[in-house]
Length: 610
Image (cartoon, rainbow, N blue to C red; front, top):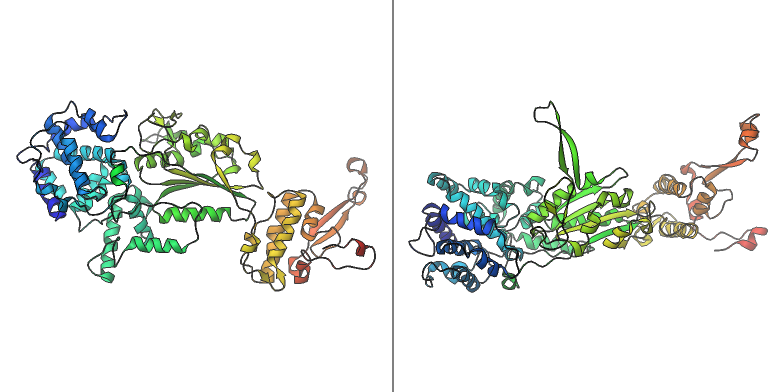
């Protein structure tokens, strides 16, 4: 029934340019859209009050037929969504119409019946929270459409892919859900009953057909979903719905997610399978500022920091989120991360021009502002390897959750706004962007980080976890006990930030593998911790500085090395320590690194300890 109404709307409003609700009125014309564009779409109201209070002020100078057109636009925007009840949809249409009544309210219109207005599915809570932007997009899009000759309009309304390409190309529609609702409403055989980019991302990622260009080319994603539907029809029959059996992709996604390990922060994903519980309360309310999360996983090498961040990245991917990944390094700069002036060649290739180049963070912020109902994340590996204060610049203030701005809001409407070097318009970090980073405390401790940055992040420790080592034993060697003893010695001699992670010991199944881990990962790390102090390296590994199967010690005598040059280098000999061939290290040798020493005869018996 609702699709029959959609076809009637296309014919009556978009081709004949007459009213859907008010018989005989020519509402869908360039004249009336020009008024709504001037007074509503291009003039957002920033005063106090709810959306409908502001709309009354915006439309005060419009003609009655202009207001009637806005009421019909609201009817169309809410037609496919089930977020509002039919009674509330009628009440809101009536409220808009009553700003300046053009005729008698059509109480008995069949297009205002509950059967028609029940909707096709929920568009998620963001659809009502950001309703002004959806309506502004509708005004701009249909103003463009009705200005076209009749033949062009007919061609667009009869060709699903031409319509989608046209709608996707309108700049005001970037991030708007109306693209998805209108495409399905007008062409249900071509476009899925999925009303958000995020959930289309989830479906295409679940079936492993997602591509990065889908974020900017929505028709390409819809074409991939159509091909997916054709393949699913071969398996399940003609009825393919990602929210209902037998396909029910969303339920499968949730079931798969439930089987994975719990994540650090639970993500709330709005499904489009039913009416949102508080949708009618949200209908007239401005979106509340959301709590952004700034998180750093910190710990020594090999403790699972990157693994934890990758788990968050996988969750973001599966949840349909958009994100960027960057790795900080000593030469990483503000211009690399945020943006700055860069020389580029001119179009003819004969000259040089200087242009502002946007970095990955600024580009993500733009996408987050354009899609306020979605969630975005910046993943940063080794955040402390760069000059963090220099890389972040004024962002040190802007990324603080209390200084965030509402995604998609106008400049200076809320939160902290600044003008970035090279950009003319104010900039604010939106509240739908999270930060997740890793920090190697062996490189730099938390105490050495910029105090301003420390206050704006929460820190989650990733300490060594011997219990995570599987298999636990290699022959007679207890890997967990070995790691614990080495780390106890390191913490005593240094601190807990310079211990060894459990990652190098995971998955070792044979003695040669363990020998290589000790020779190529553990001992080099100890040599880095105790540079130019081989005695400490051996002390941590073996617990003593006596003769050991792991090291060969020899004297370096200046009298024999520098004949006649003792006045330049001195006469004191030095000890050279060399790692032996790891192939000769036995299980007994390695067990001795952590087992209590045996009590020997003589002087050693008095000092032997566990």
